[in-house]
View 1: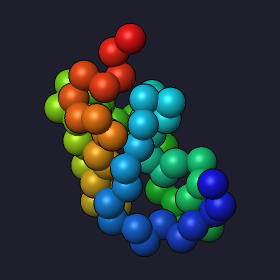
View 2 (view 1 turned 45 degrees about the horizontal axis):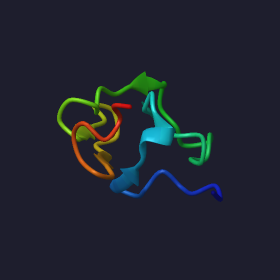
View 3 (view 1 turned 90 degrees about the vertical axis):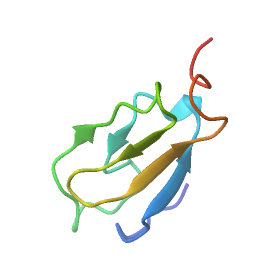
View 4 (view 1 turned 60 degrees about the vertical axis):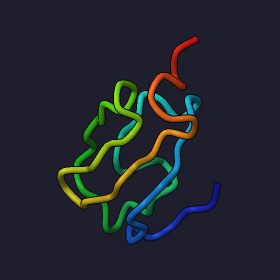
Length: 66
């Protein structure tokens, strides 16, 4: 995954990306906010309180369970 500016407002993640945090490793550091972990497993979606980026878990809620 290449580095991207922190302007993308909707990102699809997979169970391999958990535990989910924003900013993600692919986001550039120069315009990043403090790292915050986001609970996405129960609902399948999470919204970052800092930048407003919406994360959607591919497969929806429960996709992270083994």
